[in-house]
Image 1 (cartoon, rainbow, N blue to C red):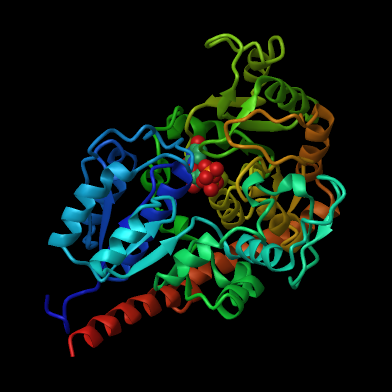
Image 2: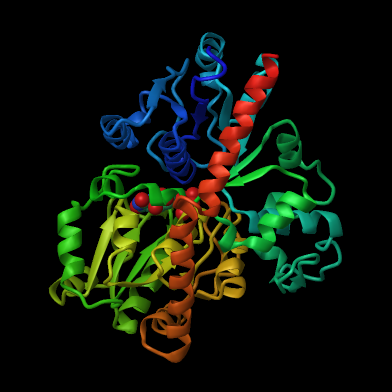
Length: 474
Ligand code: UDP
């Protein structure tokens, strides 16, 4: 390799689930747009989720390629709905082989490829961690660990104040992931991962969570490059549509439906790529939506413990037909082009499970949110949205559950109706929220343009990798 002149070479090794694969592919595209030779390492069964956008980038001259790793035994879940525990270690051999033959300046590796860190360490290849999360939850978790706040609570529903934060954030034990409820006792695996890496690449931007970005850098001592919102690299309708699985609705029908609606009159509901809901919960959503009298696009995700195969008796009698005839609502099963929908001027509210990507995408679209966290770190993101940024209202979800397990708690139809109306019916409070979220959306766009903070962080990482390469050759 010509150390002086050849461009920096980065490999990106995304996880198989939607919420991790999508932002890392976007991140690879962002780095390519800054001149990095980017290679995405993936499998034949995953590549079709993003092949077209990469081909378009190549056609427009970006230095980006895909390398296919053939798994030794099939990875169980490759349809973008994979949960974090899916085992990808059957990629160990093909990855080793490829890395031995093609040495990059670094590999950006998803933390859910649990085995990959050791491999990169053995091969002496610098790595950068990708967690898929923002800075805010990282700071909450760190403070919970330090201050041991969960020990003296009398019940799972007793609120506690998270210490050490610049904002007042209260949580309950029921909102904390089960595996974190003894957090102060176990080893800090994320820290260990970070310590062995050059740092973390984060799909966020400084203006979104400045105090928390500072905390990550100063208090945790991590190198962190905030390079997002990476979804903003999708500038064409094609890129916005072909992001993840093939949508169940063609983009034109979806846009035609939205075009027939007034600005800010449609509420969009989606719960991400992998968490499921029980039938009785879906029924409450349907009743709540109808009572709210608002137009909606509702993406029904995985249905837990479905009673009869394929039957849809969780929908109230005649609900779907009524909504269709009145032009009131679209019920979509499967995948939809989320950012295309969110950016449409007819969409005025977003019922979200607070997955990190959806959070950032909602902010970028300038849409106030109705927060309905379910699993992972989503209850923490809810606090960022509703209490720190103040761009959303809570539906009243109180119980963390595993993504595949049914919750005891059902959020009732009244709560759905009230929360949807709060955001969709004009009021001073919601206009203020709308103004705030639009302002943040503007700063998101500035962050990724030349001169912006994220643009600068991408270049800073590239410079660091160049300097390391030079240093290793003197
Ligand atoms: N997504 C999409 N269409 C869908 C469902 C999800 O485009 O029908 C995208 C969404 O835009 C986001 C990602 O999938 O980029 C989901 O990530 P998030 O962090 O919001 O949630 P997760 O799926 O990890 O729970």
